[in-house]
Image (cartoon, one colour):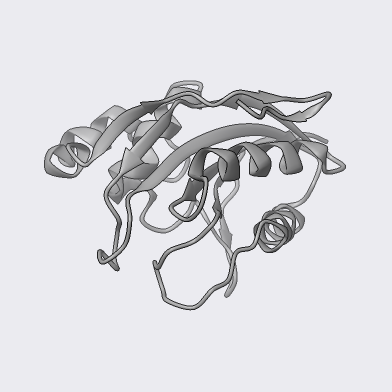
Length: 176
């Protein structure tokens, strides 16, 4: 059985766009995962720990046969492969991959919460998610993305469209 899941990606260390490209490519190469849609890229002010460089953030929709736990482990594995080191909470990182939604499932475990906690309160997640979301209310939230963004007007100002990244399924990440 396949499920549509939504992931948020962010980077603020090194070649941020290349980090995003490589993460998308690596996720797409994993068994049981196929990237369906990729959002625009947005430059955003840091969240939590603010004494760091701006992030590039985006969202992707994937079709997956992996369970929520497997998809989380795959995301963490890709983070490690791309040099993610967890030191400061909300601190600088080469790549951050968060599992936002997994179909209409609700998961509440020590290491995994779906929908992602704070999803409806973070413009830097909602704006890119809106690019790949296939309409309607968010599972477990009973409201649309636009509804939540209307409540985050000030936050929304910190999310600036940066552009798009190119990635290629067959030959690996684009070098451009």
